[in-house]
Amino acid sequence: MATAEQLKSLIRSHFSEDSERFYTIALQVAAHEAKQDHGALAHDIREILDKARKVMGPKILKFPQDLRGLVLSEEPNIYKSAFVAPKNILDRIDRIIHEHRQQHKLKNYGLSPRRKILLIGPPGTGKTMTARLLAHELSLSLNTVQVDKLMTKFMGETSAKLRQVFDSIQESPGVYFFDEFDAIGSERSLENDVGEIRRVLNAFLQFIEQDTSDSLIVAATNNSKLLDRALFRRFDDVIYYNYPEEQYQKKLIKYTLASFWPTKFLWEAILSESNGLSHADITQACKNAIKETILADKKQISLGLLKQMLQEKRNLPPSQESPLNE
Image 1 (cartoon, one colour):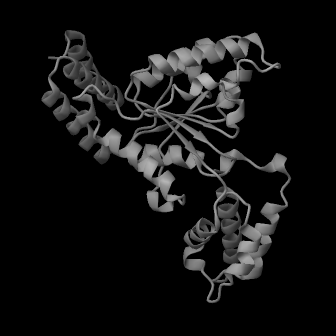
Image 2 (spheres, rainbow, N blue to C red):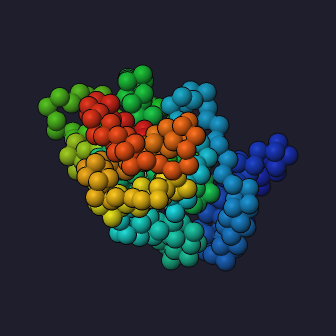
């Protein structure tokens, strides 16, 4: 059965109305029972928690004062129907979701679901959206670790902050998203590397290898060539993204324009402008065209307006492209 300390913590969290703490401790009880070879009981506890989680939905986590601003928590609302990607990527994402939903079956055989995922691809190709989708489908909060702040604002104490982040990963189940991950995971042999970065990378390698939590760790980078080779074997899965091919450009445009779809649509003219743009650029161009249409009191997008908005995205200098639009 659960340890005495776990039972007391469950009671305290219940009467303090700390539902997230109660959920976390209950998961720990399930894990404890699984280690005691009480697989059926562990499965029943997890099933009860999963059903309750789906009804209640994810809860935005409150982090300790010294991590606020460094880890941002949100409740994502991204549906699979809104995610346009090649079938091989969708299949990989579905597999991660399925393994997590059925993790009790795997744990009965001493196996774990894919929990540590590395996403690689250019800005705007869907990496951030993948993290949001995983959080939504698994009814978990999305907790984005601000890697740039970790490596600048806290330079000199980065490893200590990183340990606090991994403590939260252990204690508060969720999807933890490390964006612009190459800031941490850069190759240790790079000539411009400094001792602090090497120490941070070594600390991250140690923390992620030791992590046995119920959280999902997702890291994203625009440039895999900068990553240290030792990182790749620490991840359970690596997914590569690229700019959308023509068929996916069409799906994006159709989905985003929706009820503003014009009576006549000349794909050749539009695809000549959307070709080579990222998912985020195409989506934003369509939204910009919709806003102009609404403000002009019209019901349908004009092809000329859509072409103009796509051209504006194409003419953006590289420095203005933002991965935050993924």
